[in-house]
Image 1 (cartoon, rainbow, N blue to C red):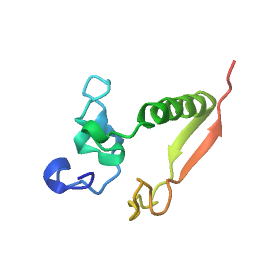
Image 2: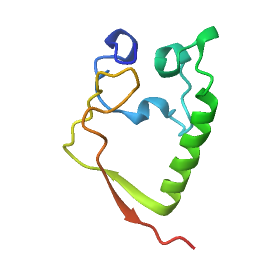
Image 3: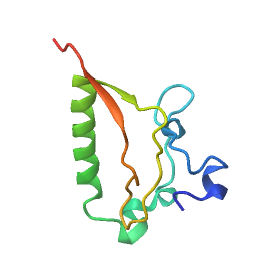
Length: 100
C-alpha cells in the first residue's frame, strides 16, 4: 500500500517529503493504514511510539548541528524487505552549522 498509485498518485514511487507538509507549512496527517510499516489496529507494533521518539531525537540533533542537502541524481528506490529501507540508501551532503 505504501507505493500504490491508486492511493498516492502517479508519482507514488518518487521520494517526496512534501506529501506530508501542508500548504501552510504544518504536518499533513495521513491515516496509519496508508503507511503500513508499523501495521494498524489491534496488531500495531508495540515499539512504534518509542521508535518515533528516537527518530525525532536523532532528526532534531542532526538538523540542529548540520545543514542537509540531498545529492542530486541519486536514485531513491525502495528495497524489497519486511522493513522500509531505501535500496541504494539516501545520499545527502552535510555541512556543519555554526551553533552558538
